[in-house]
Amino acid sequence: MSAITFAVQLLNGVQYGLVLFLVASGLTLVFGILGVINLAHGAFYMLGAYFAWWIAAYTGSFLMALIGGVALSFMLGLLLENVFVRRLYGRDHLAQVLLSFGLILVVDELRQILFGKDVYSVKPPPWLEGSIQLTDNLSYPVYRLALCLFCLVLAALIFYVIQRTKLGMIIRAGAENRDMTRALGIPFDSVNRYVFAGGIALAALGGILVSPISTVYPGMGDGMLILSFVVVVLGGIGSVAGAAIGALLIGLTDTFGKVFFPQVSSILIYVLMAGVLLWRPNGILGKREA
Image (cartoon, rainbow, N blue to C red; front, side, top):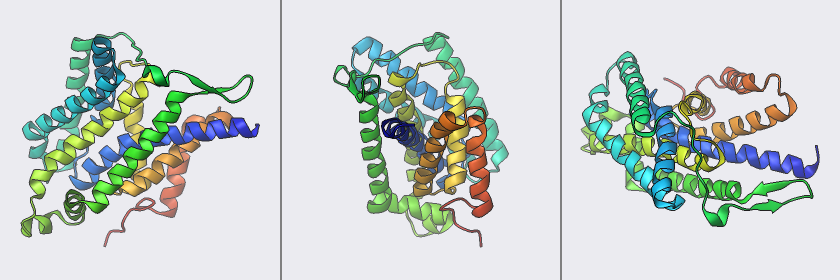
């Protein structure tokens, strides 16, 4: 493998890991902070991609699709939290699994009613449609480079909000001890709905960003759901920084695994997860239980 080919594969792995981090960070916030197992997370990733196709088809603008898709997903998250999810706080995980599995069926049925069963494609912005010529036979899409940059900026924004803002302080306090947070008079319960809606919006954002480099099709969120849970467990439940590390590890492992070990590439990420959990049972940055 030449140095340029290696660099391209490295960039592909980082790009895949960054998108996976966006989706998994929403799941780790909902799972680690609210204590809710949301099996419908992948369904909202798929729904975000369909929102992108739908809005772009009517407006002709990918930027409008990006803004509109995230806004619609956030409002949908607020509605679901207010009607269904808030009744699950503090309940056993079986009730959460049953409800979120029901949401998968509802979202999939709505997708079929609104968008049908066809496979769609989404065009990137015109100024990001070209490619950078690396060699005579090798080029790299500009959109993928822009996607990496956008994901890096967004990841930095997520870390800033969690570490440097009052909202982030409340989120971290609730993740540490929910009961004490409420006892101190901190409005943690009112923050719950925004955390859940934000998690849904991040999942949808991942689907929107991927739609120009992939097809939009039914069930596209199933694999992303599994990988997101792997990232959450690998990084440590409730740790956004751990999710970032885990997502990059999985992105690089999957990308280079398909190049060097194509016969067993599908199981390499689970081998990686098993190895990390043998080393740190609570994940890379997970806290040990007392």
